[in-house]
Length: 445
Image 1 (cartoon, helix red, strand yellow):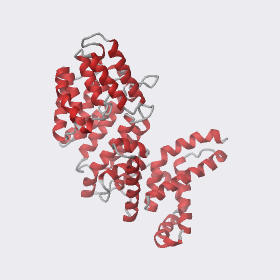
Image 2: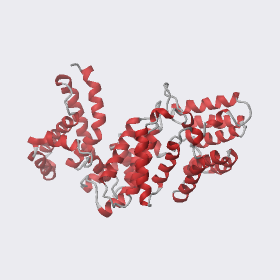
Image 3: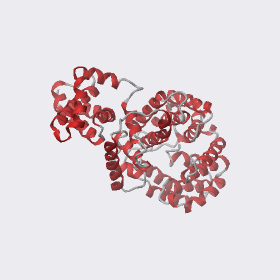
Image 4: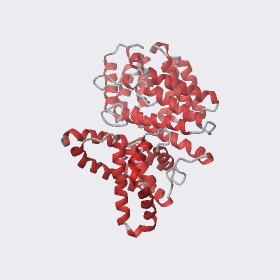
């Protein structure tokens, strides 16, 4: 077996196991930075050994064992920090004979997965809120610093500094890298939910690049969401919201296969082949939503899941209950006001009550600073203007939106809409069948 044969398998295995490796190594070393370095060294060892020996039956266990042994070597040589590291090394060596079996067991345990502990540690109150999210997205989600910076509209250097400082603070505090319990769990759970949602969104609607979606990130977020609801006690405060988030992700993910055409181009929800929607995921999502709503204390995520369910329950685009969607956005705006919610509310009202109603709500948003460089705003206005027969103005708005988006597939889609505006007859038809709420604001669609 040659390196050419094994390198794709090695790279795939490392991508799958990376977060789990870092989580397990962080618990051993109490240092996220050291854990990342050890994981990379395990990758180098695999690149050296697997072409000779073949891909092992359990790549994750092999990588963890290699990294664990390297950790022991480092600890033995680092006599300047002997007291702390000797204790860790001793603990590691005590069970060394059964290391692989123990590692394999932990990797197959869906409830006690160490990544949850890593997420809760990254969301620890000793860190500023923005650092919690940035660190978890980097270490668990595998996003680059640049992607995180774009998600937060911040400079890449600023995000990098936050991550470095967060790692240092966690190491100095000697945190246990375990999921909290009781009141501490309730206090930190909202931040964990936020991070999982951001990971999912980056997969569902990539902020940059040629790919419209990154399914691997969606799958990771869904897995973390499923584990989270399984791990939380039945009466844990906030569990309804955890179910709400899980419902939202499952329903949204059900449409991934239908969101892009053979060429990778974006397909709006109103034009998607609904036969390609994953019925199993829809069923899981609706079940999770029912559990969230049954408790009576669901919040933002449960409401967003209810919005997604309106689309999932419609057998045809024409059957979508836009009046209910508009009503749900009214409720969402009341409990979680934001410019983005206001924009999506305007889009929903435009679909439910006509483009005039939507445009009246969109116009004031043009003066909101947070939306000045937000592509969905001119795209929404363009859609409403076209439906009103004001094609020249609509074309200008679509071109402005295309200039603002950083995703190439979205840009192509918006430019195509602009071109169609140029040749469209005056009147509310044609592009009116492609509502902006489903096409240029994919994180809400």
